[in-house]
Image 1 (cartoon, rainbow, N blue to C red):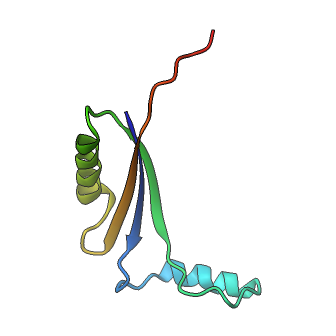
Image 2 (cartoon, one colour; image 1 turned 60 degrees about the vertical axis):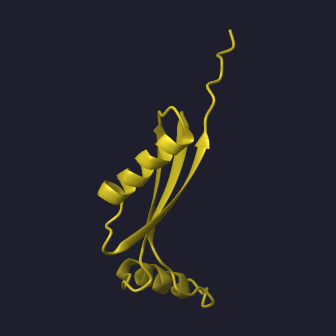
Length: 89
């Protein structure tokens, strides 16, 4: 079993109106030094796979086909193996 952490963000060339609104809000709170705020998505999921390579392939395909819009968004992910823990009785 593997645990994937996926970050999807708008490409730098794409205008981010939600990020601009949040940046404006941060500035209105008095934090004028906050710059270039961008909003993205964070997705976590467990992947049952026989190898790390298979889990990477599954996550990559899920991102390309569903989680990220390839025209407007980029994605990165990390993957770590999760070992089953025995229940204490």
